[in-house]
Image 1: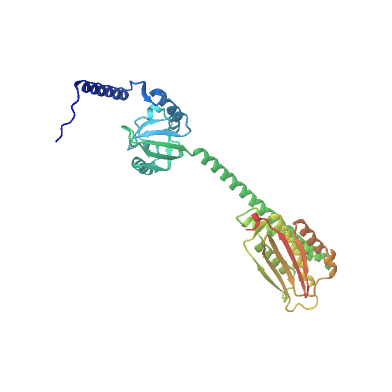
Image 2: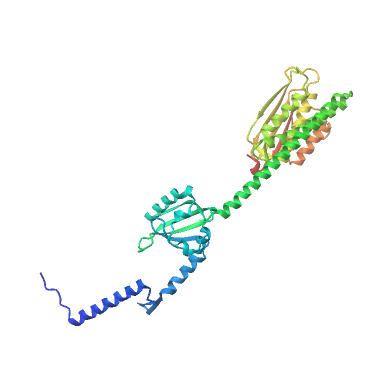
Length: 383
């Protein structure tokens, strides 16, 4: 074994003095007696004021909008800021030494205990319900993280009050539900009123001896029924702003065909429509009135002599960003004056409604009559 170098009595005395100095420094730090540290740096001695180093962090914690705590592993509160004291309904000094679990609603205490256990082992986060001393409750979110090198506290926690945003959201949802309920009731009442008007027109038509006047009243009745069906479908649907145009036009065509066909008539109605295409109410009403007029014209005029094998067809599907609606029959065809803007009041109404919604109107070649409407639909209406 080699000889270890021997220290001189002067070196031993210097090291003992240095050790005593460090021990005194540690004691002073532990007792809070040290106000500053002087540390040699590359540019000379640096003075660190302990009180000054702590002050910004304490101000930050006290002014933050979340509750801040330091805790033991069992949830005992060692420190809390003023925000958490406000949430708990107690002064800060009365919260020190209490268990966080005592400030949580009974239904959430088991969950909070699990969060504390996980937080002491590393970190955890979850929803809890705080219960103040007056019994009032508020939803909150707690985030916990372990403090590895602390001699006293095992973890720190941040508690976020969720009662404000949740209360506002709940009020908005309640207001929206109320408005939807009122709007549905409006649609329901409008539908009922239109049905009453339609029934009155039907009774009036039955008492009119002039067939032309009776037919005009019946046409008005069908138009009003088309409007009533819009409100009925909106009342039953999830959306109060859009309507499934396939279902709506199919119902319109069936209603008009049944109301105008003579009992036992061989005229058939064939529908081939795509469902799930939603459009706004204005477009739906216009297309409903258009289909009402076209189906009505086919029933009344397409088969003047014999309706044997007579078929009226309704087709609807999407073509890119447009809706294609086709009403056709295998009857005698339509007079050429209709293509030039003439024709009955019903066809003039069809042309005016097409212009109103920016749709194009096209008449197909015979045999029979084919009318094609292409209406633009926006992305929000495409369904």
